[in-house]
Image (cartoon, rainbow, N blue to C red; front, side, top):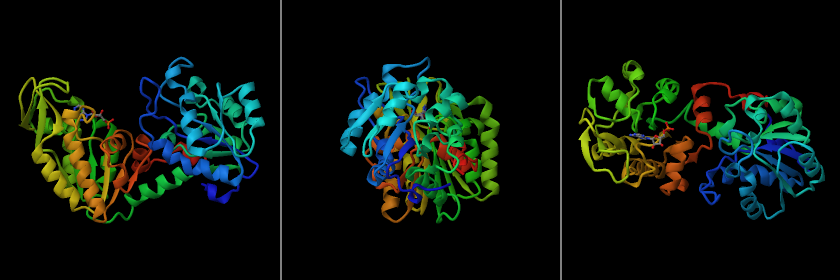
Length: 395
Ligand code: AMP
């Protein structure tokens, strides 16, 4: 993969696949800037070289064509402020108007294209659609790590139209470098913290990590499947009944490989999936019917924090509880504090995107960890050892 350090964009129209899939509130205001901030350096390099960036992205999951809540027009103001230059907006990512706006674009100006997923051809990886996009630029840059695991028109298929003119942006470079730090040669003790709702999404990564880590901490909704597998009562907590055997197998494999697998011993349980529900602390093997674990409990916080603070490499993916509700965010927050403390003491900490990145940012620890990945699924697939189509297409 060629890096954009190898090219001077002077006089060039650089078609950049960015990941501007940012959360918007009901007033269409951006509520998390992680991905936008991460994209700045690549766009800045193109502008500083005297080129013109043509930015394309998806936003959300539109079903049948254009929908205002998924329009990228809501990002124009922020981009204008960030780069101090004119940002033009093409109301359709392909077609005559987009082509005309691209061809009239001057060095130092930015053109933002409307949401790629307003066309169903984007996700289908349609070759003709990719060809129409390709006509807009002289050079193709992929800087959307968050979608690099998808073989969509703009993330992979389009690269065939730029045989010698395709590059990986700074985010792609950075993501790979940081992921490698917790794959090969991670300093020990190495602890992986896995959380979130479902174990089924994370089986492959957990299996792969067993070859690298010293500790695996499992929290969040997925931990109850392990307790049920061990014969515990988990009340109404989240469970994947068809993954009970798998949970047992993972525990056995960890033992065989000498990896310590840590489960939360207690939970903050609630009598409803509601921030205002009644709560109490319960042992995870004895949760009563009608109660569900929505956060890890104080004993789990203590034991997890001790392990984390003694670690030299940390990978974290998935919250410890339903952190979106303030009464169930403490476990995630305390784990974040332990990760921050370990980082201050010299550990390398990588936060795998998606919900864990949002949690770390919302809780205000974004600046105090080593690296927050912009890709959730993409990072996990990269770490599972899969070749990501978006990266493969650049080679
Ligand atoms: P994932 O996408 O698998 O990383 O899961 C993230 C989601 O898991 C978040 O929206 C959390 O609210 C949710 N979650 C974490 N812990 C629990 C739990 N104990 N019960 C239900 N949902 C949970």
